[in-house]
Image (cartoon, rainbow, N blue to C red; front, side):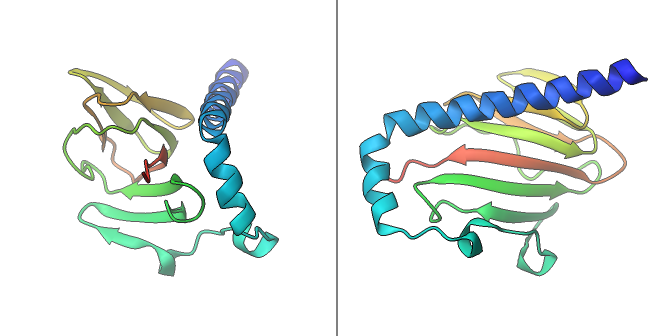
Length: 155
């Protein structure tokens, strides 16, 4: 049991390291633009801490979502919680120009990427490269809760 817990911690650590690397890469690529945005925005503890509030969530056809950081908060970088009812998905597989990460917090997810699938549970990350067909759906009997980390192109 201890080895499973250690493996889960390593998966979590690897996910966050990947997110950190992605953020660092995006930050380097957008450095000049971010300097301008950052100089116009005053970041305080009040606007930098966002605690989940069910009343602030948005109902979807299969559950709800909560934006911890929407694309207007900084420079298109977002962090969203998605909650999906058992045996449902938010939408069918699709593709878009932005890449994104999913990170499962609770439940059992089926990940779809370019015709292939994998099933996994909590503390699992799923990277969706730009322009790849991808999707996630709840294949379990409890709510699926996952984070979506994405940077929208605002140009």
